[in-house]
Image (cartoon, rainbow, N blue to C red; front, side, top):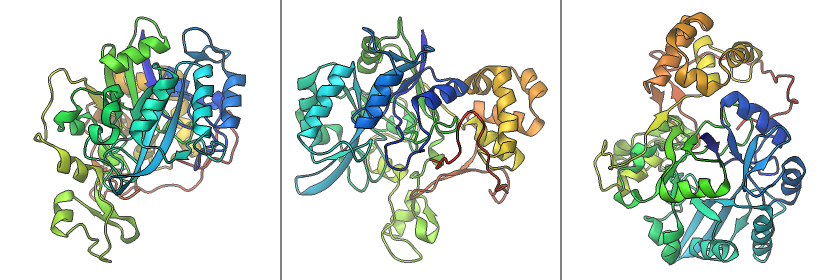
Length: 422
């Protein structure tokens, strides 16, 4: 059974998320995208867990379902901010849980450490090693995955607040960490450069803050499972058996790929950044050190190294972005939906179109420029202007690397207006 899973996303009670984020909208737009298993996100938040209970049905498989049969697994993201050996650390972890009773126990444990009602991704002063140990005391079926593990500010290897190894972060509980999430600004090839990561499953999820198809499933992990159950999913994560491939952002498109200083519009390759002592050449302040730089610091292998048995991956730009680039229009605009919706109707979902549609069908149903972009995307040959210091990277389509955009936005009738984009 082929499962395309996005297990890291959020509900509308997390900070900086769409107020229209709902289980229904996640299901609707996941079908557009082609993902068939989602994480619920934010299961510790009291209002969101009530929606989960009201909208989803639990059974003995550990997979929750909507009335129409769409699949969810219980998930959340927890922020841990604490000091260790005299240094401050800010680490985000994904948590997967086998059932609602375990979720209740996790929430009760966290309530002994602080509040869970102010944000879907709450913050606690708990070291990673204690966090994992205490969760495993609740249930050994709980899975903890370091989230977007290279992001500068809040991650395992982050340049601003992270560690240099999984062991350093998790101590004697490191043996219970089985997978790491690449994050938008890195892909598996970058992680392969660290021999310490060979034993971990490398997974990718969207960390979506809205339900739109250019956010949900923008990164995903593909499994081949005998049957979709929580146990089979966790077994695949812990053994790599049944984990087939990951779907990845181009890491250059991520918001923290290169070093830079957003306030001064400065983006620098790590080599140039080092020559400039990591200081902004305009204002002289410390730049945000990006993922590529941090990988170079920790890597013990050359660029291009591929470990034996490494799982394949594909770098992909979401279809909506390709449409906008081809037509010089804005994402979420009426004109974008006028192209996107008929294509989904014709090909079933976005992944079918991007990965599998025959070229003759693309010729029939798209214009030449969009067809060429889809084929470039399929072959992994899209060129990018790298992101930096919280600024997304951009596709380069001409000498200037700039695209004219229309300003009119449009929300299709299936959802309400008032979306904040993430």
